[in-house]
Image 1 (cartoon, rainbow, N blue to C red):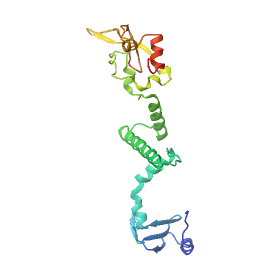
Image 2 (image 1 turned 180 degrees about the horizontal axis):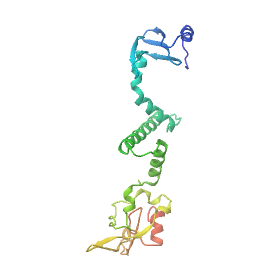
Image 3 (image 1 turned 90 degrees about the vertical axis):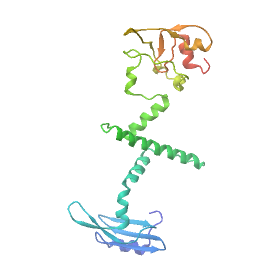
Image 4 (image 1 turned 30 degrees about the vertical axis):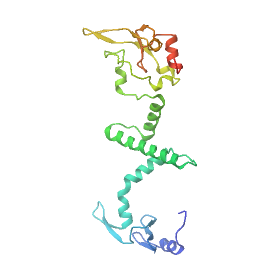
Length: 235
C-alpha cells in the first residue's frame, strides 16, 4: 500500500466478481488482485498467477490463487508476529545490533510463553500476565514456585548456606527479607539449631544465630547485622 499498485490493475480489480483474479508481472515480480469477500492484493517473486481448487468443509470447492493457498500454512508465523507486535521491546536506536538483540529477546519471551502453555494446558494466563511475571522475577532475582511455601517454618529442613551471596540481597525491597527460625531434625523431631552468623564469618568472628533470611537463605541475627547485609555492598 505504501508504493501503490498500477492504475490499470487497480481499475480491473474493482470490477472483479467473487473468485475472479487479475494480475500484472514485471520480471520476477508478480502483482495479483483477487476478490473474495473483498479485494485482496498480493505481491510475490516465487509464485505464478495460476488458480487452484481448495476443498471446503461442506464439500464445496473454492478457487484460490496459489500464493493465497500456500500462505494459509503460515498462520504459526503470523501468530508469532502478532504477539510480538502487541508488547514489543524494540526502540529507536542508532546502533542496529542493540535493536537485533531486543528482537531476539522478544522472540525468546514469546517462545517461552508457548512452551509454558504447552506444559500447562490448564493455565489461563495471558501473554501480558506472563510478561509481567517474568519482569517481576527478573527484578527480584527470584522465581516464585509452588515449593516456596515449603521453606523453613514447615516440616521441611532449612537448606544449606549458598556458596555466593544472592543478587537480590541489595534490591532495596526489605519486605521480602524476613527472618525465620532455622529448622532441623533430630530423631524424627523438629529442632531449631544455631548456625554461624554470615556477617561475623566474613570478619572471621565467631557468633551464632537461630534465624535465617527466608529470601537469601543466609544465617543472620536480628538488628544491625541484618541491616548491614541487606544495605551494604561490603558488609
